[in-house]
Image (cartoon, rainbow, N blue to C red; front, top):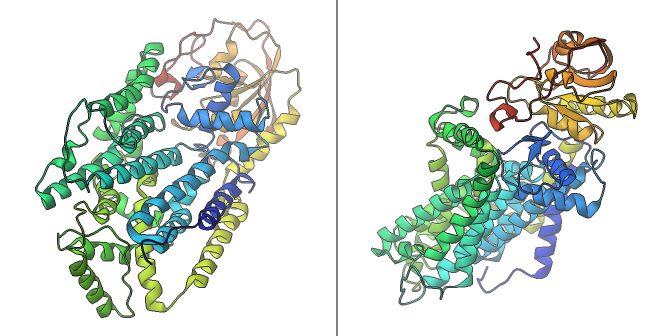
Length: 573
C-alpha cells in the first residue's frame, strides 16, 4: 500500500464498531463480576454514595491500592445511565468504560501503525489487537489495566508525532525553560503524568519510559548524537509529571499516614520479593506474552523476523510503509534485504519508526522481568506494538498462502463469535462465581426489608476480595463488617440481623447468639469444601450480649489483611 493512502472514515467507524461490540458484549453475556473485577465498581459506588471523589474506601475503610481515575470514569457511567446506588442488575454499566477504553486503544494503535506501515498493516494492527486474547480479556473486565493501556498508547502516539516531526529538523536547540515547544510534546508529558492516576505511581512511566529510553540509546548509537535524548530534559514537562505523580499520593498520605506502610509492601515488595503472592521466575513474561497474543502468536514471530531484518543492518530506514511480500521463504528474505538496501538512503529521517515499535515491544518486557513480583496484566500496555508486529507477519503469511481480505474477515468474524460464545456459554459453566451470584440475588428477597444485613469482610484466605462481590450484588444498605467481632458494636440495636459469611463461621456466630442458616451457595470461590460455602445466616443476639464501641480507625494494611486487627472487643475465635 502506498503511504499516501489514508484510512477512510468508514474504516475507522467499522473498526471502532467491531471493537465496541466485541468488548461490550461481556456486559450483557450474563457472566457475573469476578472477585478482582468487583473491586473497582463497588469502591466507585461507595465513592458516589458518600460524595468522596479522591480516596476510595471499602465499607468506610481506606482502600488506597489504586488511584481514583478509573473510579471517576465508572462513576461517570453510573451517573450517565442512572440506577442510584444499585447496579447489580446492570453489569454492563460498570463494564462499559473498559470496553470504551479498549476501543480507543485499538483506534490509537491503528493510527500509530498507519504512520509507519501504511493503511493495510495499520488496520490489521487494530483488528489483531482487538482479538488478541489478553487484550480482549482486559477490555471486557471492569478493572484498571485497560485504562493504563489506553493512556500508554495515547502517550506513545503523542511521542511518535512529537519525536518524528522534531527529528526531521536540521537544528535542535535545547533550553530547559523553553516554552516554545510543540503541543504534542506537552501532551506527551501530560498524558504520561495522568497515567499515574490509574494503577499506581510510575508503572506507566516505567513501561513507556523504558521503551523510550531504549529507543534513545539505539538512536544515540546510530546517530552518534545526544540530541534525541536531551530533547526530553524539559523542565516544564518534568514539572507536569511530578505534580500529577505526587498530588494524589501526598493527599492520601495526609489523610491516612499509615498508607505509606501499605505502599511499601505493595510496590517495594514487588521488587524485593516480600510480596510473595506474585513472585515469579525471570522467564515468566515470554510464555505469558505468547498466550496473550493468541491466536496471532505464530504470525507475530514472522512479523518479528520482518522487522528485525529491516533494522538489522544498522542503517537509517526511512519512515514509509512496509510492503514486503513473496511467495517463498527464500524470495521473502531476498526482498526484505533488498528493501533494506533500497531504503537505507531514502530520506533525512534519522530516527526510525521501526526501531521505535521494536523498542516499545521488547524493552518493557525485559525491564518488567527484573522485579520478583510479576503479573500477566502488566502486558496490556505494550500489546499494541506486538499487534503491529503481528500484522506485518500476517501480511507476509497472507502472501504465502494467497489469502485475501475476504479470508481475513471470515477469521475475524469467527473469532468474534467465539469470544462472545465463550462469554455466554463456556465461562459461566466453569466459574464458581455464577453459583455465588445466584445465591446473592436470592438473598435480596430472603432478607426482610426492615432487617439489617451485614457482610463479613474476612472471607479468607487472606487476600480474598469476594466481599466486593457480596456488596455489589447485595442491597445498597448492606453493611460491610471489618470482621465478625464488629457484630458486638454498641451502635447495633436490632435484636435480629442477617449475616453473609462462610459456613465455617457458624461457630463464631453462635458465640453471639442463635444462628440459623437461611440459604447457601452450592459451591463458592476460593474454597471448594463445604466449610467454605457462602451462607446467609439469621442471627438472634443473646440477651445481655456484651457490647463495645467499634474502633474508629482501621489502617490501610488492616483493611487489606496485611496487619492484624482491629477488633470490636476481644477477638472471636
